[in-house]
Structure formats: C-alpha cells, structure tokens
Image (tube, rainbow, N blue to C red; front, top):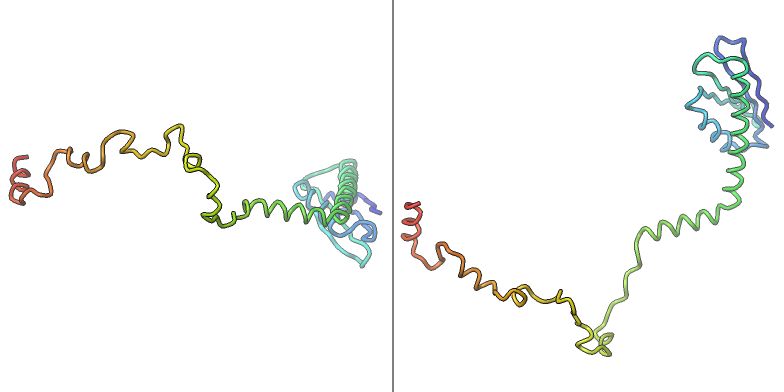
Length: 173
C-alpha cells in the first residue's frame, strides 16, 4: 500500500510517499517516478528491504492542496504502472514472439531457391518472352540507328585524319 503525506513545514514544498515493495514491484515504482520527472523533483530511498520512500519536491511554490493532489496522482500512476508490469509479466512469451516475428519480417523475404534450367523446360519459347508492350526491344531495333552509324554521322575530326590536319583545324578556330 502507498501512503502519501504532504510535508509543508520544510522550506521546500514536498510530499513523501511510503511504498511497500511487496505490493508494488520496483519497476512500477521507477516507472511512476519517471512519469513525474518533468513536473517535480523525484527522490527515491529504501529505508528497509520492504519499503521505498518516494519524495516529490515541487519545482516552484505549491499549496498544501496541490501537494496532496500531486501525491494522489503519483499513487494513481503507481497503480497503473503496477498493472502494466503485471500484464507484461503475464504475456512475456507472446511479446517476445511478436517482437521476434517483427524483426524477422524487417529482414525481408527469405532467399529464393536456386533455379535450374530444367524448371523452364515445360514453357513454350513464345510464352517465356512474350512482350506485348515492346519493352524488351533493343534501342537500335526500335529507332533504326546502330551505335556505329551514329558515331560516323557526327561531324568533327576523325581518328584517321593526320595529326597535321588536326592542328591546322585548331589554328583556324
């Protein structure tokens, strides 16, 4: 059981909560404390093996009612964290299985088995390479010019021209 007690006689506004570790697991206490880190300073102490003292110190001025509300909210969060911890413990095997499947799926599909030429013996040659859109047609067949014809049609110095002609052409320009 968790019991909260606002402390207003200290110079800082704080609330102390004594939590029994036999009821609330340590993971639940840490989880609840983590949730409150942005709202107040959290101090944990273990006066003995069966209890944990949680001290919530306000970051600014707080009234006694606000401190009591802060302690109540911590106790509620402690209960929620204990319930989450119980659910995780109960379904640990299923969570591990789901995580393993998710990580295995992220690796991609397993590799395909090796393909032999015998696997394609039953296919007709026309079926295997049927291309109704003409995607597999080489560029030269589709547009009618071979690569050697386009190289000859490009104006400029040829590889067979003498070197003196090349330098004379360069001086004219």
